[in-house]
Length: 126
Image (tube, rainbow, N blue to C red; front, side, top):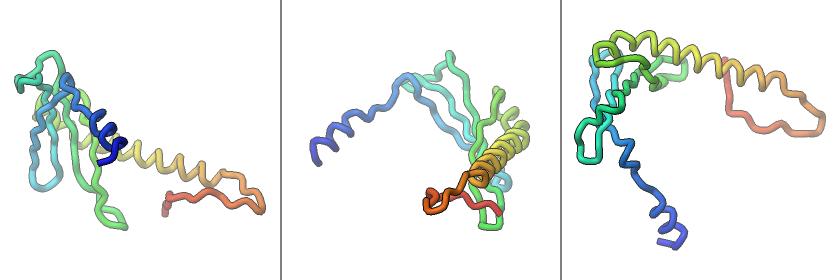
C-alpha cells in the first residue's frame, strides 16, 4: 500500500455519535421499509435522536425495473411508515420526474454555436 493510500485509509472513520441500527421489513410484494434506530456506541438506543424510516421499491419502466429509495418523513413508528409509504413514494417520484424534465429543458435550451462541439449528455428522455 502506498503512503497516499495509507493516509486516505487513516482518514476514514465511523462517526460514533451518528450510529444507527438498521432493521428491514417487507411485505414481499410492494417494497421494503428500512428502520434506522439511533444507537450509542455501546449499542443502547439513543432516545435523544429520532428513528428514521426509508422506503424502497422498484418502478417498472420501458428499460426495465428502476430501484428507488426515499425517505418517509414524519413516521414515528413502523405502522405510520407503512401507512405513509405510498404518499412518500409518490412525492419522491414526482420530484425525480420534475428534476429530469428540468434537466431536459436546460439541455434543449442550450445555445448551439457552429463549430463548437456541445458537451456530452447522458440524459435521455423519451
